[in-house]
Image (cartoon, rainbow over all chains, first blue to last red; front, side, top):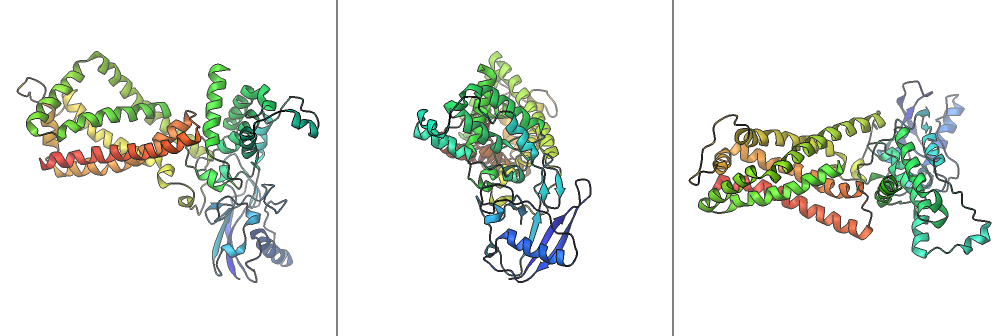
Length: 247
Length: 210
């Protein structure tokens, strides 16, 4: 299988950046998208050219590092999928595949396809923790939590912080990410102590980081590898209103 | 955006119900429509609501503009290729454009009616047999012009689209997060938007054909 990659190259945060075309031959449909990039990089290195910088870690869809914008979609053409889980069989022989880094003012480009997602960490630092003493793992069973509540918290906790929601949003809003972190802990008794402080501080930090505001296009929940529902954002808004007006 | 938007949604319902008087036969419609509009102009409560309405429109437009600019700053560089049609509706991605079209309509609409009747600009407005300001005649004569009929009807398409996305997302902005409720809300938004767009859009044609 042969494809034509059109990849964003940028040396450093301050350089201008441009697209470069690479014809890649000898790929198979069973290769993951990242393996296809590796295949191209091996050739570049062998030719004494600079390898294309991109991030990855687990390559099994759970770490959220491999954030790349592929052919107009965050993580490529499929819904709810990370880039490492995307295979070349999703493309056709001879396709031109446009590969771009996440675009958002809050995610400055470090090099090529690598962006700095520290802004998400800064939001986490503002309240995605608990101070309640919960003991060791077996003691977790001592705190009774209704099944539906546990499920709801778990659905939100599934967020892997990949930033696809920000990348795909036309406003570069981090509302889905922030809502997932808030609703995860605020739904549980362990997180109740800081509930109001958490929602106020984390949403404040979200604004300070330069993310845009949510206009409910719904693109984020489609691109989210974990399928986190946009309803979480509405719930965050409700929690924020409650914290603001009633403490 | 949400609060002013919802207030405007409420206003449109009242506006459309009043407009439906225009669908009655001419003899009844003229008297009823004129006496209704006179009652509105003379009521203190309606005057207060009218000022809230003006303020809502200005705030909705002004805040919408500010928030759009801020959102563009949050995403200064766009993607070379972006197939957002695969993950969201065109309407939700273009609320600003649709809103601008609605605003364009509103300017023409206010010039046609509000400026003539309330501000006394342009051609004078006569009285009907009951001594009420003949707003019916203003409407009727405007919609003898096919250009205005087409303009008024066509611009109800962006209005309908804007309302369809606006109504449901306003509720979510205000923190309505009941899952089943949101599914119902999505349907209600669609029906509401369709009634508004078709209702407002068809009346000029019916008046034209009268």
